[in-house]
Length: 126
Image 1 (cartoon, rainbow, N blue to C red):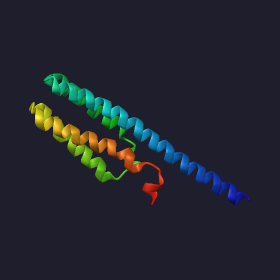
Image 2: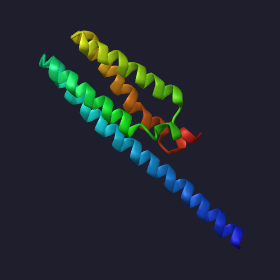
Image 3: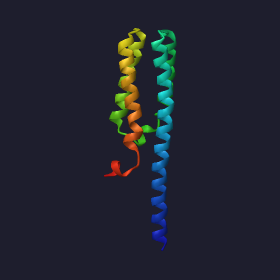
Image 4: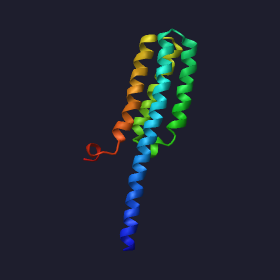
């Protein structure tokens, strides 16, 4: 009986951690997406100094929020996002609107794809 109780509690803990990690990923993604929208708006308005500041804020949020992501995610995805962010920073620094917007769009897509990929559902399990 103790073993069954222990297994049940362990299973409940694992499922709870799965839902918690998914919720946390979604919240982090929302915050990063909001920041990406602010940077995008600054670029569209031609406010390059503001875009640089917002990019710095985006990088700070990324470093803060994504600190624990490697525990749950593939490191290759994290590296791809870091590479994309580095490219984007240089495009903003050179005030290249087309490349900045393209790279920002790619960055947003990569970030928003993570919670969908890691979501706890039958499609991802099977």
